[in-house]
Amino acid sequence: MSLGPINPSTGQPLPVSGGASVDGIKSQGEGGLGAYDPQTALMIVNIKRHNLIHGNLQSQIGAFQQMNAKMEKLGQLQASLSEASLQTPEFTETTWSSSKADNGDHKIDLGDGYKITVKDNDNATWILEDADGNQTKIWGDPHINYGNDSSKRDADFKGTISLMLDNGTKITIDTIPAAEAGRPDLGDQTFSEKLTITQANQVMVVDNIMSGAGTPTITGPSLENARQIDDQTNDGVILREGDKGVGHFVDVTGQKVTGYFAQTTVINEHKDQHDEPVVSVDMLDFARSVGIDTTFTDPSTGQKVESDGFMTKEQIKIFKERVKGKQESFGNVTQLQTVKIQSWFNKLNQSIEMASNVESKSHNSKNTLIGNLR
Image (tube, rainbow, N blue to C red; front, side):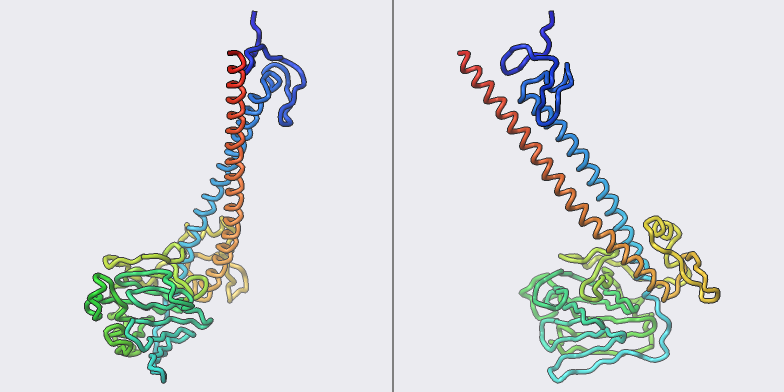
């Protein structure tokens, strides 16, 4: 004759029915929690709770990964818009200028509020500024400080990089080895030596930044051979203005560039786009799927018309703002998701700790019972 479930602690038969309640969960007859001793019942409750928490955690992580994938694609879309916005019409006369300040600094005006200051020293220090006063300082071998607020190194690079400004200006930074800069003690480090600045058919070259000990050689601005000079200049790693102007720079995915990020072997030429759509059909479909307006007002009819991917500069500017707004919205969502994931992790750890405590108490009870039987 079967005695039914056995209490593992006492070796005695357990009741198979009744109204026992453990941690708020009531027995429902044979096989219910009433069929187990309290410690075993607590373990079962903890296992069920653990599985529930684990499922919610997995769900939150999945949603977070999906949102991150959308954020990455938005970054790619923003990069293509930035690339397209760099296309500028031909100049009929130069719009840039340079001068020397009383303190010896060289000042370069690139129009639209963009300025470069080459400091009067021998540490290859120069500062880029935009119309809103955002700044990035580049100095030394070479270091980057976003904000020009200290000597903090937000990023470092070696070799050639190009900074793409929102008005279509490209600043290509060439470096020279430390030995050529008069610092053989620094081994294979490099210093900013030359800036090749181009915008459509306008060009200016700033040379001898390091070797000239703060007194660079400035050629231009000129409208002659600008595109040829641009074609002959390796762009290296291409970076673009971030969401705070030149207060920081981002890579092709829209991520803020930090740390050590450029090697001398990288070649990534920026190419003009004339006959290709600014935004591909696939990207337009993606934009619509995440709620971005892809229509523009037809000036001849005043009606809203779906974009075919070809955009004017004004439309590119409008669309960039729409994408930026969606990026900020999704960014807020990912922050909330991160908080929820951390919360579920905490609950999971608590569940594991509770199960461990129950197991420990059960083990101690069995040891006590065995000791009493001896």
